[in-house]
Length: 116
Image (cartoon, helix red, strand yellow):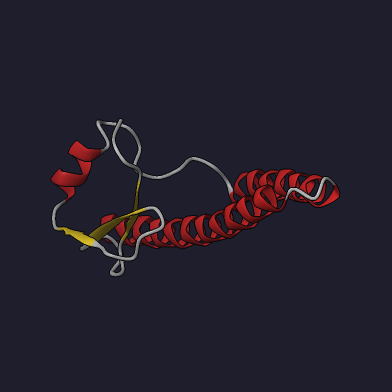
């Protein structure tokens, strides 16, 4: 299984970078041909709406909150620590997904503007 990456484009799709989830070091990807190959003919942009993304993260946060309450109730300090770390990772992932989503929207908007 390949490692998951976050793809970003600071200039609306002309330059594309990628990085592994949770890491800050980026790798630059120059051409659209490389991107097409990496996604194996699948859409590079999520088809989820903002509402669907928000709902998924809300469910994750609620599940983690329940686990956190249970860990506190049973005084399982190790589990509580792991849950706090997971909550932090989920927050970071949500931020990364929102940034990637906004970048993709901008890139699509620029492509549509260039094509018209």
